[in-house]
Image (tube, rainbow, N blue to C red; front, side):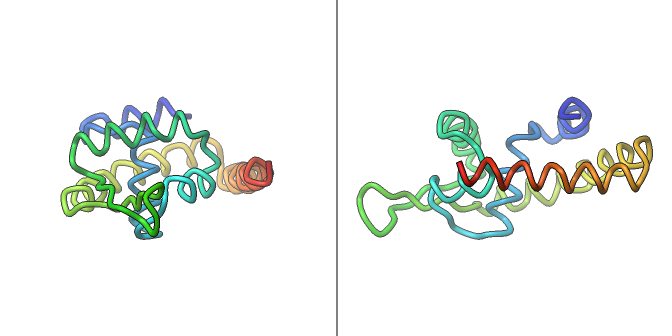
Length: 123
């Protein structure tokens, strides 16, 4: 499935993982890397690698948090613009997948994935 989304997002210079991080930061606002990783059930290595690419493109900024060890991540103006540019492509890919799989199976799959993500967050 990731390949379908990656192909759709390629013209926007994004991977599915990068889009997901932009989307999460766009919805949640500033988050620490730990909270972002927990929310998305991502390991810190994968998260750090993906965030680094987004920071290099100036789509995500990192500011000091409450203590020196914490960094707050947020979308920059260009990150918000990139997310807005990529969202229609992501929606088109999702619509195509849902049509091929069928709405009932698609909804069941999303439910299962949400449950698995919850289990992963619990550790």
